Length: 105
Picture 1 (cartoon, one colour):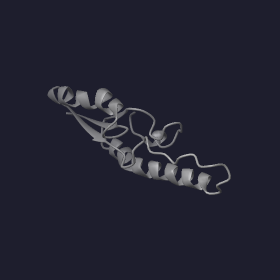
Picture 2: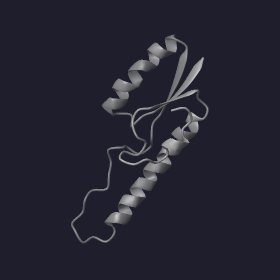
Picture 3: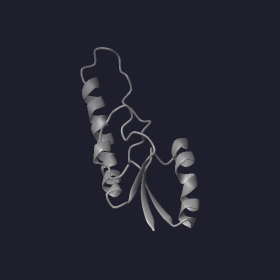
């Protein structure tokens, strides 16, 4: 049996449903086991733009980026126990982050 780790954007995102989840059952019938790794933090949540002059805006954005990175670690670790890693999109949109640590993307 081939093991595939799928790193997706979230539970309610259309991209995850159409690019990954609809293929789980057909792949299972072919002997391919797919495990989806969903981050704890929704990719669409972000730190809103505040009025100019707020000192902590940059630190809030950095903390959110750090939280997104941390939420992806279980998926990256899961890729090491699979034969193939299916990356639906960048792990942290707009940034190269943990992709070099994936096994067999």
